[in-house]
Image 1 (cartoon, rainbow, N blue to C red):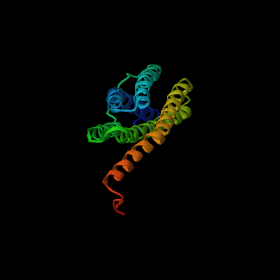
Image 2 (cartoon, rainbow, N blue to C red):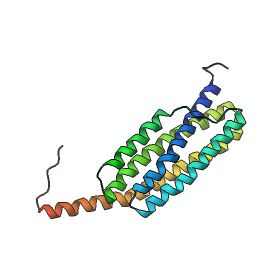
Image 3 (cartoon, one colour):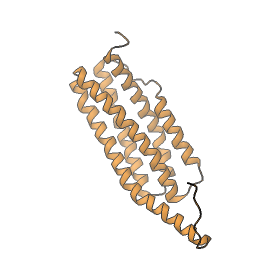
Image 4 (cartoon, rainbow, N blue to C red):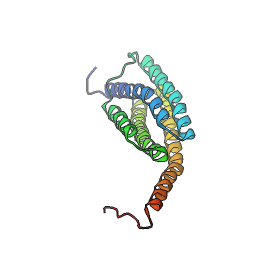
Length: 180
């Protein structure tokens, strides 16, 4: 098979996603543990369950293709996971830490949405009809997770800002100057 064939690109992209998902299986419990908001923590725990299903769906696709379910190192997800770990090592607390974790998680979701959208399109072009529904199911779950994170961010970011305003009030009535 030619290296420049769309089918080979499709398989390589699936391997990349497979590795990305397996990296997330390890990262999501850490994100859940670092979350102070119970609903956010539960969301990460639920997404961990979904992520295991994403791995299983990819394994089904590899099986249908007659390919070994292995990943090639997904450098994009590796970077996003490292950024998330860096955020969690900062000395943020409470709602501010939760807001930071949500930002890191949404970067991950957007990356996955782009990846699954790409492979779904490749599957359509290649006539891999059995793969399309599996990929669309995962894509839809990634979008739902992103929407849930956005909904939680609206509440948590307000809480984080409110805590900051309360801190400002304790310092006196003069507002701090912010750099432009």
